[in-house]
Image (cartoon, rainbow, N blue to C red; front, side, top):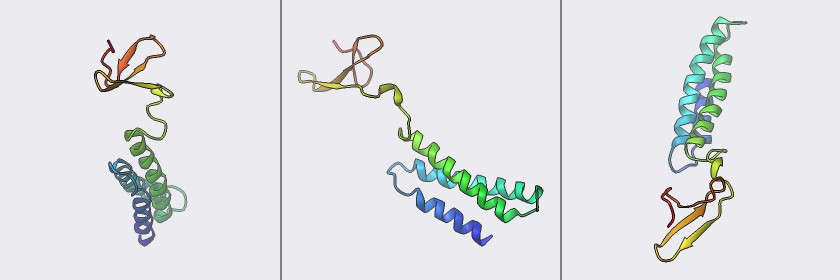
Length: 115
């Protein structure tokens, strides 16, 4: 059980680098749920070693949770629909706009049509 606590603590510390906290919460929640599921599966399957199952489950759950939090923050491959869009600055309105490659129309950053 001590090793499980060490593994969960390590997963939480490894993800403590973002400002929004989504990665941290995802890693902590994933490690907790993965550890519980791993302990149950490890106890009921194979040699009946709940501790090893909990460690493996916590590691996999923590990694998956951290990735999910990263995607929620817009990183890790999220938001690929606007890759390589060049923005222009409109001095009259003081806003940035871009050209949609599919339609050929121009839009402000918030999606409003550019005049």
